[in-house]
Amino acid sequence: WPSQRQHIAGSSSSDQSGRQDQQANSRVKELVIERPAGGRKSYGFAIRTFRILTVRGRCESLSYVDYAGLLPGHVLISVNNFSVEAVEHRLIEDRIRSCHQRMVLRVRFENVAERVELARRALRLRRLIREKLSALKQIEDRQKKLVEEASECNRDEDGPETPN
Image (cartoon, rainbow, N blue to C red):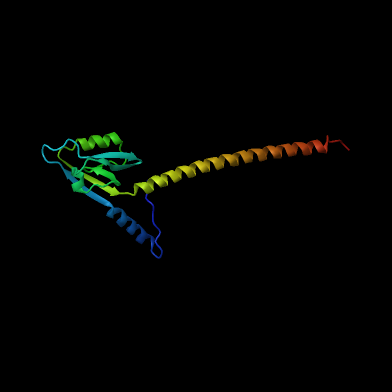
């Protein structure tokens, strides 16, 4: 998802860029999750994928992630400094499973519900644009056919050309 630049009245573009970066950075957290020796096999959270990698879909009660601060809506950026933003779901799971006692996650809070609604709206608008373009093509084809028919009628009405 491309970042969206906010337009702030009365500020220069460098101010806008700086504020956008500050906002993005303030939403990024690094979480260290440690399991005690002989602890549970899993870290206690599930990953769900919807164009963005959202962590903690379902949770076991009072799992290790509760103490670290992992919340629903966090988007996974990296696991142990390995970027997972453009990686397959299964590879991320494997990466997390390979972390035996300690894992460092970089996460960013995203309003997932808003993202889902925006994605739905975008799909609906793309569909509407396709329908409108198709209707426009049909109108253009019909108009072209009418112009051709009118040209033929005009030639027929003028009759055959007779030499003077």
